[in-house]
Amino acid sequence: LLLLACIIFTLLLSLLFYRGGMAWDKALFHGIIQGISAQTTSGFSSLPIATLDNGSKLLIILAMFIGGGLGSTAGGVKLFRLLLLLRILQLLLQRIAMPNHAVVAPKLGQRTLDDEDIHGALLLILLFVTVNILSWLLFVIHGYAPLDALFEVVSATGTVGLSTGISGPELEPQLRLVLCVDMLLGRLEIVALLVLLYPYTWIGRRTES
Image 1 (cartoon, one colour):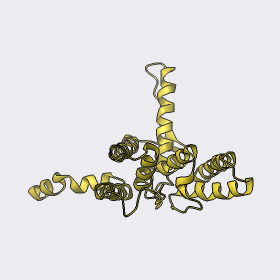
Image 2 (cartoon, one colour):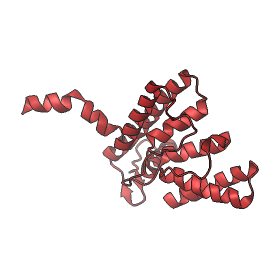
Image 3 (cartoon, helix red, strand yellow):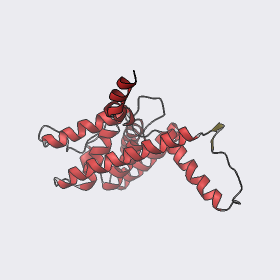
Image 4 (cartoon, one colour):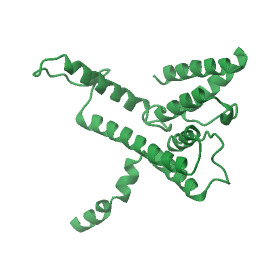
């Protein structure tokens, strides 16, 4: 799936670069670099992100948000969680046409999904979306272009490192702090940090012992 995602984003970006005036060879070269870099969240760039059109930026944002494989060092919500979300949506649609007493076990490939898998994946996706929206709003309030601000926030939360040029020494200290928090949350996948900061993790256990 990671290979397929890289191919799809590479072809789409190459097409947009070509339509933007690049020669086919250059469009394909930059499309491959940017597509794989965004999908694997490795952060390499072969051209200034700020010069890209809005469609290309949106594609890269989507790739960075999805990220790589579960258990890898890539950032993002991970491909497995995206597949799980799509599978749950498919089941919800299927059950509309099924009798009320029908029982369908949610499966992903040969793996039967239990409640813990489903709840954990959906919670993490929701948290990622929430963190990105809140951080993006802070940038927009400070007057930054909405799309560039979203790119910057998703890049930070996905631990990618690509930038439209907003990140830099001249960025307001409070927004630099926002990006630092986003990077930390993205690297730890949010839940781990929430558990660490949850008072009962420390106070409750100490009291019980």
